Image 1 (cartoon, rainbow, N blue to C red):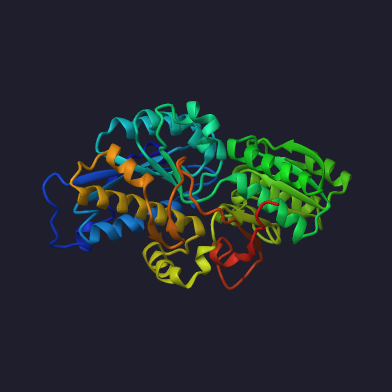
Image 2 (cartoon, rainbow, N blue to C red; image 1 turned 90 degrees about the vertical axis):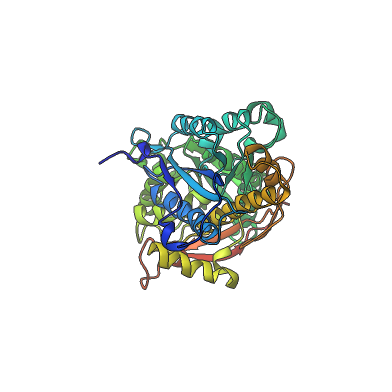
Length: 411
């Protein structure tokens, strides 16, 4: 079987002949949007749910005559590798260069992971190619302090339909203090850009709020046995453990901590929210795990019901919240192309980037707009806890993660 990483899929988007039979686009009115996600490795299922959310929006746009009359072709690139077992920053950089070198590519969706984002951003900046990430939350990439590193050409090119770990980590620390009444915690990360970053921001706020941090360790994603560090944690007797990282190490942490740390509150960021955690850790190991997402809980919003139904019918599985932030990211790009086309300007990556920067788009999560750095102006962080519902598949994110409320904003 061909490596999924090797696939570059150019789509007039999913069997569109049936979707818009008889509808013709003007000659030359075509653009390409890239999608870069880890479709190989530990996060492949969640990446697929993100891809499908974006594709649904592009399908709908093309079925209705395109974006401002432009047919949207899609280039799907895989930044996961078998060697890494998850996202691979080197592959992400290769994919960024591939998109930049193709002049038909006017914008992109992704990446899913911040480690990939750090590798891609400088390349995208030099090509003035805007990307809208539905899930990458490391704040450094859009922080003006690191502008020389991540946007060397000057303009913002890394836009988000989620907030950053400058809010996600600290707000969960506030939840630990105010709701869970945690007094002591042990902090873990998986050594990746996202995991280290969110663990750092969680830990700083936990200490500020009076939680005693009993220690900090890194879990090697490629190791299989975490019993040594988990046994050490057990000996210290923390009330809670916070894990910053994604599924490759996260699945093993969740499975092994269930046995070694019974009764200990376990929580993490959006790396702990997803089908891969449910599928990989299983029940009862995943039961009770807390996780955040860096966005509102859109799935429970009645306005999202038509989206959920369309998604389930089209893909034969339930979406997760980041399927919606991907859908919303695609809506941002579609809206930008429409506005450029209506203005009479050439629809290219320069004009589309400028239009994305000026976005005020009605989406499923409300109006999406960006600050000068590319960050979404909404700062909401949502908290979930896994509670097994045997009426639904064990890896059904919609039904196995129960919404607990909005995490308290920084104090």
